[in-house]
Length: 330
Image (cartoon, rainbow, N blue to C red; front, side):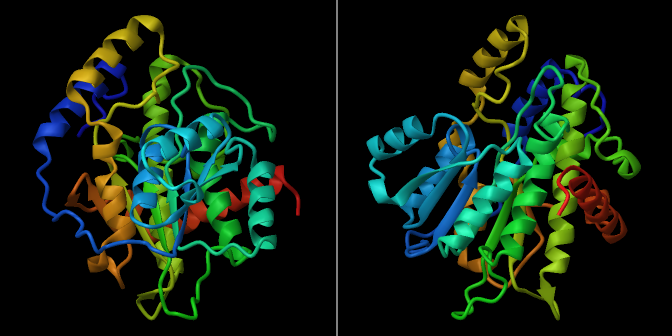
């Protein structure tokens, strides 16, 4: 889709409605035996919306799920148990994804506890209507929607919590919840990656698309770096779940929020439906030995060519490390 005016909330909603009926599924449903018994998964933004649905459904397929968020964790745990999830299958994990120090601390705690992850679902995202600063002086939307994932993944790999070489040969999987919005972006300014964001509500969806492009670009660079001889040591996947009912737009002005919620209730997917491609990428046996797979709902699709460009991926990785080292000295 052209950048047109998906940058306007109304146009973005209409695009989501059209998208729901236009994209045809091409993949079968998971078989009942495609399970994660004995495996550990971590889901960011797991206390609500798609993250909560994914956490519950991964637990229903046998995983022990670390539900990572900084708000409503106890309520989310109680709700998961009320939906029939055994209490020991969902473990609240407090982490503030807007705070790079908080992310580093949680990874260190996991490493000290001997944790080993089999699945990592990077789901957290926000759409704030005004710019806000993080404890490290960065834009909150930039950090939560992109940089937190870079820091979390690289730290988990460095500490061995996300192992590259499993003794049993079982390859871990990292699943990025991206978006077709990554195609809207005008491009990445890698020379000023951490520049202050224009906080105008009219520009928030343009920035959302830019951060989703960063996320997809990072995912494909990660997939390249985690292969040896074309064989993935950690598989990396990404998806767009399609339009769904969530509270991600809770900060929109009231005149926009009310009609948006009405449209969501009538026409958008429930998160427990929208999480199907996430579960497919986490559980499907057909994906063993594969990496760099992108789904738009339940249909495979190429990412935007900019996200797949290896030179852009390397440059984004280096720029991200520069930002982190400037804000958090070793």
